[in-house]
Length: 64
Image 1 (tube, helix red, strand yellow):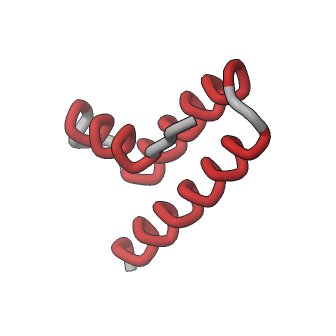
Image 2 (cartoon, rainbow, N blue to C red):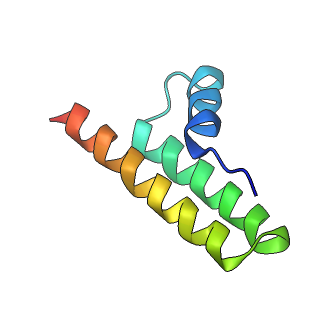
């Protein structure tokens, strides 16, 4: 399954520009993980976690 958490995050931030970055990331993660749980594999969920952690690191680094 082709998963790009960052593209979903960017779309969410464009649609809701005042939303906190961490809140936006968590919202996107929840939605995508539910979709993957329905139609994806365990490996897809593992990839999603890797992408989430990478984006979270960027967001937290920018916040400092």
